[in-house]
Amino acid sequence: MLRELKGLAKETAIYGLSTVLGRMLSFLLTPLFTHLLLPVESGVVQTVYSYIGFLALLYALGLDVAYLRLGRRDGRPDDGSFTAAWGAVVVLAFAASALIHVFAAPLALAIGAPESAASVVRCAAWILALDAAALIPYTELRGSHHAGTYAGIKVFNIALTLVLSWVFVKQWGWGVRGVFLANLAASAASLIMLLPVLLPRLAAPDRARLRAMLAFGLPLAAAGLGSMVVQVADRPIMTRLAGLGPAGIYGSCYKLGIFMMLLVNMFDQAWKPFVLERADRAGVDRLIARVLTYFAVLACWAFLGVAFFVDVFVKSPIFAGHALFGPAYWSGLPIVPVVTLGYLFNGLYYVMLAPLMIDKRMGSVGVATWIGALINIGVNVALIPRWGMMAAAWATCVAYIAMAAAVWVLGRRTRATPYEWTRLGGLAAWTALLWTPASHLSLPARAALLLAYPVGLRLSGFLHDEELTELAAMFRLPAFLRGRRAA
Image 1: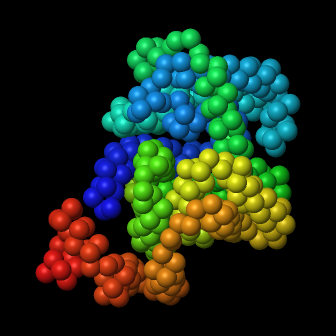
Image 2 (image 1 turned 135 degrees about the vertical axis):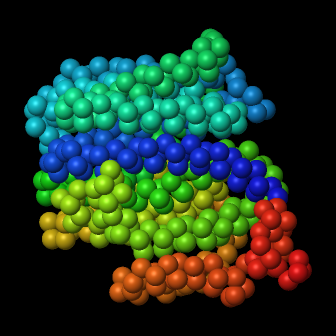
Image 3 (image 1 turned 90 degrees about the vertical axis):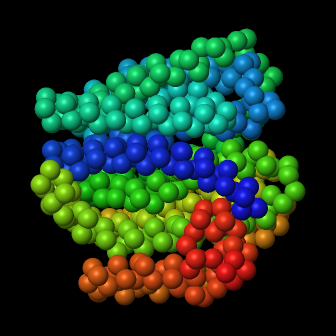
């Protein structure tokens, strides 16, 4: 099994390289904006991008995952299916964006921004449309395992956004509007780069296959909407209940969860195609269970690293001689470990989602995500007025925990995936034991605790001898990590 997982690890590494490079480039915008924009202005940026994330899922109709599952035949693209999926997304996207453009001023007021932000709303509308037009070509690159091309275009998009943001915001002083104009230009450039993928595959649309893809994808889109509510609802609610300033601080510090988000996102990019290709093979349930354990091991270590060192990282003069974040934003730093923990459970949710996707029980996926969404909204509305940013962070974390629990319960009805709960429980206890005292310790002591994490797993026998032996052979691990059989 571990040798089969090497293919997943390879594609995860490729997607991960693009994700890490791209997200790190994108992350550089956040420190830049904390030094150039007031918290209130950042609040406008955070709020509008929250709605962009939500609407992007509506625009997609779930056809990206549906195309991977039903639009490609025997591992090859089907032009009729490709055209049908792409055309459906594009028609909806451009029609919806045109309406947003027309009603930009009242929409700006409706989301809690000033009426002067209408130009920002218009930019956001066309960012959505261009990104929607690029969605199915990007999906085809994933499905055909052209990870390098996918990675290159994604990194170019974000690098161009960074450069243009620097010019528009820093050099030309365009403020919030410059942020969105930079994104709009980068989205247009990326779509142009995808034309070699798009144009050769345009053909007569396969309407019957489109109906099948919509039947598969729309419930997934509904589930995705619930998931997106969990991810972004806190910022608009924060804007309404606490104001644009706290929303700007919260949203900026939330992005410091990038390290766990990177791990989760790059894994998920490879995980969905990997597990769907193996949906009909014997042993897929055991494969899913083992992947959950291995992902949890890595994610818990990443969580400890962020929780131990994020405050020092942010306050250090590493951004052109200044602290990474402007001091006006430091009050949001206590939310970061909670946000990171939430992303960890989001990763567990993605793994345990696989049985429902394999069995095409997309309605159950929707139930799980909307459970999380309703919990998230309820906790935010009830507790933000009292506890502010920390309430919003815990609302998201609890929602992800609820989603992971829900997909596990729902998945058991048709597929008995043998998750390794004893090992996972021990891992959780070891992680909590290391995390609890860390805030009272010096930096060297925190570093020692971080190094103690893998040592404790090795000495406790958490990893089985056969796993250590095969891992050592595959990745040339040092002798300390090898099982007794390899000694």
